[in-house]
Image (cartoon, rainbow, N blue to C red):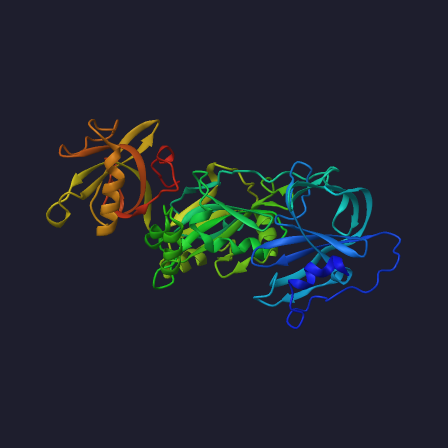
Length: 477
């Protein structure tokens, strides 16, 4: 059949299990359709309509849209034989379209309109039911649009952005542990993952899209397939002992060059620890209790080379806190089992219990180093915002590598100012160089002094994922 010449020319049928040609088509009462999920070099879906003895086909990179508010690209490809309508299998690597093919949906359809540049049909499938139109935009590029309302009348659009819910520092475990779930606290950066149409978008607390910095997370979209999810979790890097290390992660933060990202991927790979599910297949889950959101997350069975769902325990915070100390982790998070998800809020429903005192602070100045550090920062002057006033919290001169000092010097240079930015607390040293209070860093320390300063602080790393204005002094409740 002449219509299948292009299909045959692209394939070696000695290697691929795909059908060579079609049986003679009988007269079906209704023409058939199929949508195949195709895990090729890039995940996509193949939308095929039976017509005139072949399957007229489009590749749909983001899947068939479930909502009339969104159109998806559909690339018109070569006609396929009718036998392809129930094809499933592994196309060998190196062959055209190499990868796994599975039938995602199938059924029959009615033709409303069939023109050279516009095709309108009503689908009757197991998953898809309703009227769709495909229309040509340019050359092989078409768009596919759902004309009917969503099949699920309660469907909600995926949010574009969300502020993560935050935990309050606690001096110890809650007194009613039976009402809490307990998780390890991961020493990384908070990130929400928006997974849709096989694509993954990573967003930080500052609502910054950092997807390009962490390519390890992209295959999660392929693994999830057609599911639509918003995950809450932490991006971490591991040290030589296999422990989460914020210092290690520093080497991956702030990179903008694709070649540099690729180079550092090999040296400092990252992992994503998913600990909450905020949106699933058209439904926001923010109002559900934490216990139910966690159960739904675990049913997804997310586990891959660079992502996992770490376990949590209900009621037994003592054991998990001891385990976190044994493993030299930062601590644990206690979450009320009945708590709903409140974006951007820091309240008593989530508590963080730390093995070591840590605090995020804003750099408001620096003191010049001596000896080898001459010309570089010898100590950082630190502060936080209290009732809108930038308050002095002391200085830190330990925990830096030479490379980090050079990076800090470069970042601080354009932020220099003549007057002290500190508006409250004791006065900083006279020899200080002052800065606009914009750079955020994390410090480990022994305690807060009565005078409101850190005792024996040590620099742990820059927090480029956090805004200076949100940094306030954390006191245990």
